[in-house]
Length: 317
Ligand code: ADP
Ligand code: MG
Image (cartoon, rainbow, N blue to C red; front, side, top):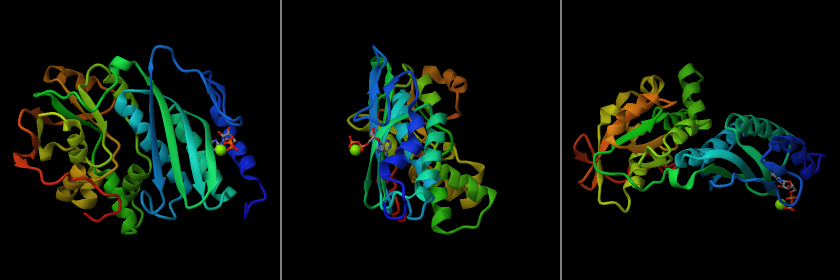
């Protein structure tokens, strides 16, 4: 420790130890391994996500925001499988494990974990260029998990929430926009994605395919169509954009970011057309943006969409 009198392990114990209490955790942080009691009869869904300074976030990002970003993005993968969150582990590489950095990070991480009903059960801490990984574990009945593959011709293409806000939030940071309600909303959407866990679980056995939107809906819809002979028809005006994004960027830019802006962490899923009635009963807002067609490729208002539309972190679009 260069700037702190506390040892690394003491700091971690202090900030993270109480985070791991739950009946499913027989032994949490502090031993060589955690001992966990999985649900019998369900599949364990496992996924890991990493954030690297300069690649996934701007340097100087407040640690509290890194915690919401990391956990939101990781848990979103559980939502996309229809899984219920259980546990996560955390690999932290920090240039300096100071209290000034660790405290706000840990407080934010533990609050976010509580909100998302997921327990921190262990991890690893090393010194080096700032990077953070979270491995999440959840449970889902194996025959009810939502997979990327399975969309059928005629299925409705649906998305949760609004799209493009996160890209708008990044823009406000890159442009150093002054604070306003709009700017705060968009930055909140960028820093603190909302994994659509309730919708994911409600879609078990209903959706024919599902993915979370991390590269823009056009690119991620492409993942649903991979290895299938089918295509998709989207309606640009159907893309849900927030009033804040439209006011900030104008409708045309907002729709472009809705299509290809990155890291919304909303769900994109397909639903048999006969199930249209369930949409309004889902726990979170859902919009139909198009339909699966027998013709390969993605068309937007009838025009073949160029490229993947995917968003490459800090590359200018
Ligand atoms: P080991 O040397 O056996 O890997 P460590 O000394 O790295 O053990 O970790 C001691 C304990 O602290 C372990 O239970 C580990 O899971 C926990 N731990 C270490 N780093 C973190 C972290 N970043 N987040 C949560 N728990 C951590
Ligand atoms: Mg270790």
